[in-house]
Length: 244
Picture 1 (cartoon, one colour):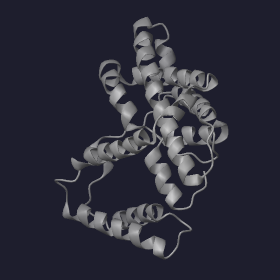
Picture 2 (tube, rainbow, N blue to C red; picture 1 turned 180 degrees about the vertical axis):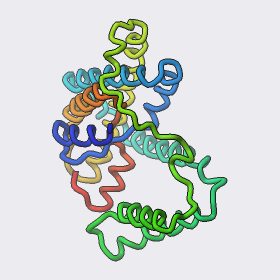
Picture 3 (spheres, rainbow, N blue to C red; picture 1 turned 120 degrees about the horizontal axis):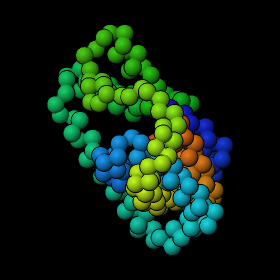
């Protein structure tokens, strides 16, 4: 649910008509203790506070401070992001089934080979659809998402209002929400710098911060969690000719 809400809202009120958003590894490190202590309700409250803080940052144009960040820091940010993503996936590589490894190999070949045939549709998207259909049709013994973690399908609409008088929970959410907003704002600004270099079009980072804040507030009302623009996804889609 959070995915759909964020995508629609940020495309309307954000800086660009097409902006890919998702939970980030940097903010995830901050919220881990919060979820452990306060659960989903605390995370939703922190998402609400985070949205408000992002709007304030955008209105005060604090995002512009990122312009003084040296190019080396941007490069380091990208490299660190890649290392974090790779290391977080290593635990899922071994052990697994032979069928899963086969699907991975075929998927890599499709992602590499399809652009040589057509660039009209991103090859990862085609690969996901085709391999999902093949796995379902032939009932392949592959590892599924539910084998790693159960996905909760319940909708916690307006759940934080059930705890509106819990002062301690709100104070905890306030601290974490501000910290989440600071990290997300820095990452958003660095992502915008990378996107500017790829598209040769200057971004309005303040407007993007306000848009992200509005989106996070709306998704928190509906029981969703925080999102921010993701550099890795945007960089990949730019390579396929998408216009942001």
